[in-house]
Length: 503
Image (cartoon, rainbow, N blue to C red; front, side, top):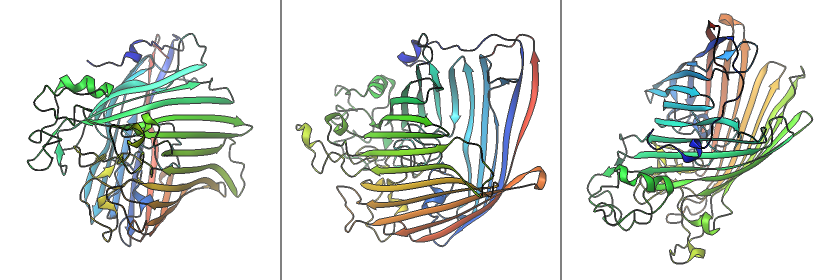
């Protein structure tokens, strides 16, 4: 890759040993068929953070099939080959009011030591956040279809040499492509990078984490009349390779180029992300993980004027094995998301204390907003126009509601030592945007209860069911549900070698 992250060049991580061993490739697969229905628009928690695979109009039938090849492990150990490859394919079909054939995952990946490169679409969640019951990481939540990209990095926390495992790092550097269909700005690219560090060994009872993610949509063009001449010359946005360093570093453009306006002279592309801090502590059989994501979408975080905004979370996880009790609590997640400040209601570029109106996930050039195929890429609580009630003001494309205060509770438990049960309950206040506020401010409740029951049919399947409800002033009032049967399994084979390289 021509543009390789400097921090990656400075690290060479090879752990483990060179051992003669038998390596086995395991191919997990799943097959699922189900049906979904709703009284109106598909309820929020039936579709949010489902990687864009559940449409706004509930499908009458839903088919889901996937097969994966992970990196091979050495028998009786967790060691992996020094060099290896894998892949993943997931196909989903929705039939009914909205018929779709989707490919949320289709990728190939390879590893060399601790480094990994992959190309294609892959489900990811970026940020220091709970991954099971969260509302979603602020900038990259799993709410939209995965964006196709090429990525290189360290996919898991990897010890820095000579620190004896006390300091570890993970991160990635990626280039991706936005869709052209149903988008006003076509031909846009994604630049993404993230770096996170950990202080503390995995065996320690207390660890600290910190890092950031940086996401940029840049390049592309619009049809005549879509963009104001002040923000784009003849609808053309800076798209050539010469602007890539400015995209990566977030530096200013150069007005010497005929396609660069004074707008790009400030920044090339739309830059957004979060700066994250977290800590986890293990006490007895319980682990607590607390995290905070500070958000940025303009200069307000740099000037300290939007420090109220961000995602706050606490995850409490039971490390015990199920005891056979009628009710066994696995996990509890509590989150609070606030995006109502945005640096204040006034934007004066010359006054650092009045650099407000950040207008999260919206942009004067990239008018489709921080979306992919119509779905918000970041937290689903920042709502596109397409999802809100038709009785609310219609402001066209982009994010209609980005000033949000949301409380969220997630619970995972095991009932009767057999039934996996989870619930997500969220209450939010939604003020629209500074430029186009909702008056009065709509309140919204969204909730879901999901159960999975294992059965001994067909060598072992699970019956999955969900019931969800939306009630309030932001989204259409709706009750919906899902019922499906899922088969999972492993396909594997052994490849024996007398001198395999393992990690």
